[in-house]
Length: 281
Image (cartoon, rainbow, N blue to C red):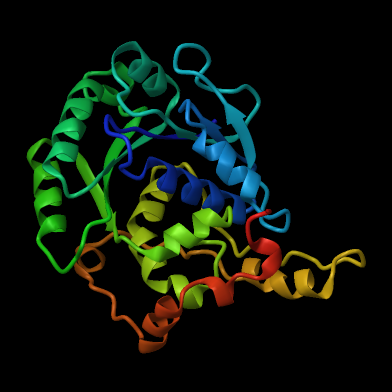
């Protein structure tokens, strides 16, 4: 059972953002994915409750680090874990995870917390044997500064795999508000963000967690669906992110931002999200 866990000692570092987007990417590829929530705040339940019925299905599950950290009978599991995970609770997650991703922001406090977490994980038997792979993801790092270089150098200094960094963007904020991910939204407004995910998706594929994701089927319109909903199906018909090989050229690439994308982001997401996708009142 492929299991990807998001782990960080600090709260508010982007675990939930990563978890929802990874789960949605799996779902858009036709995989039967379960989004597990071990955090008492149960952010995943809130997101799933807001997810439109027309979006690719994602099952939900709530566990407890003091009890069961993995449900039975699921094929692909994405686990969102609580902050401050350590000791026995962290070891239990490592026992069930095939991959652990540690989100790290530009703060020195985040890096110190991540260093402590990695020091504990790297001694776990499943990590030592390679059965559980661990990597870091930069969260909300501004490429116009040295934040990404500092973070990647830090990861190299402690022997932690650094995959990529994701920018701070209203794309993620608007997507979460509507129970969506960047992979559910039109590529015309998520081009830059999808490109930043390429190394992460490639790594998951290389590790064998997912196959190269095929283009998802279009959500069919049925007689009982209103014309507005039928028209909104295009939001879920966009091609899935294509898996590319990680290379120095890709890592060093700074994507060109098309003017129309900049303009679209400036106008906000409202015009791109059909009414039936917006949060239920």
